[in-house]
Each structure stands twice: as structure tokens, then as C-alpha cells.
Length: 251
Image 1 (tube, rainbow, N blue to C red):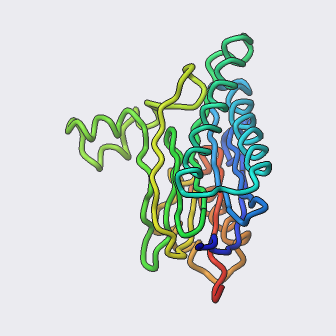
Image 2 (cartoon, rainbow, N blue to C red):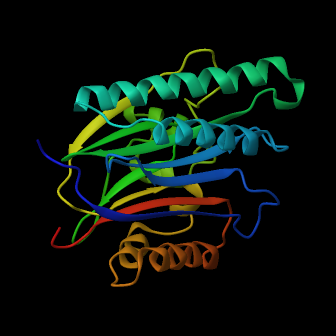
């Protein structure tokens, strides 16, 4: 039986230079079997509602993962991802429905579960997951936004996505409806670094800058700090969340 590839991992959030509150959350943790879960949430709703939604998602997911001793197969790993996301969605929706203070809240969610020689990625919204290759980044997720929908319909070009005033409009989020749609995609773990982030990171730094920051020989915490510094120096227009994993060499 193949074992999960050992690695180092870390996560961090940053308020940025413009926002007054931080509605982003990030996590990177390991269970008793050595499986690793990375995740990023970007809350929405304003007036602390987004903060509550993203924090609630993180707390429920992390507690469920810590209490999960092992997965028996890739199928059971993906089943767990689906189950816990449905639980989180219903909790956020019910809190929003039953409490006027939290009405209309929700959050994006991207997770990467590293199990044996596979990476299982679940995405809701526009936070992103990447593989860091030798020369570039490979994006593993597709933004679930209005402009991405227009692009696939042939209404706008790829270049217009980046400049459109509608690029922040989400087509999907966690907790906004009683049920949630999501996609789980699996990739082989070829020991490339795995990088997750919220839109505050990729909107304030280019893929080249991200790749350069993650390709140094620094400790992973320093790589994350450097990337946040780059995004802040480019304007820091939003909250930022990062979760990052890299394989231990010669393991």
C-alpha cells in the first residue's frame, strides 16, 4: 500500500493594506495517518458576516479532519470531502437564515487533500489551487465567477476577464443555499509544491512573482511571508490567505 508523501506545510492570513477587517481564513494540518489537508476560505457578506462564515467553515473542517483517523481508499477520501462540505454548507446557511445579523453571508472554499500518491482538490468560488512546477504554475481550479462563465460562453476574451468590473461576482459560494454544488478533481502527486490562495493574493501579484517567491531555498514560512509582502507592495487591495505544501526531499 502506498503511503502519503511526507512534506512540510504552513498557512497564513493577512489583512492587506485596504480592508478594515479580515474575512479570509487558511489552514494546513495533518491527521494521525499522515494525510495532509490544505484549505483557504474567503468570506463574503460584509459587516463581519464574511468573517464568521469563513471562520465557521475552517473550524468545522479542521475538527472533522483531526478526528478522522484514516482513509481507506481514494474513494473514501473524496467521500469525506463531499460529506464535510455539505455539513459546513448547511451550518452556514442555517445560521444565516435564522439570524438576521448573518443574513446573506457565505464563503469561498478551496481544499487540497494529500492522500497517498494523489491530490484531491475541491473548489467552490474563486479561491485557487496551483501546482508549482519547475518553470511555472499550473492552476488546478477554475474560478466560478460571472466573467469566467461569459468567457466559456464566448462573450468575452481571456484578457477581458482580468479587467472586467464584474470579475468579483461569484456564481457559486458555500452557505448561500441549502444545498451546494462543487467539483472534486484528482491529480497524481508528483512531489511538486502545492499552493492555495484567495483572490487577494493573485489579484495583487502575477503568476511570475508567485512562482519566484515559492522557488527559493527559504523556509516555507519565509516563502509565504515574501509572497504576502509582494502582494502588499502591489497595493494589498484585499485580504489574503495562503496554504502551502512541499515534499521533503529524499523521503
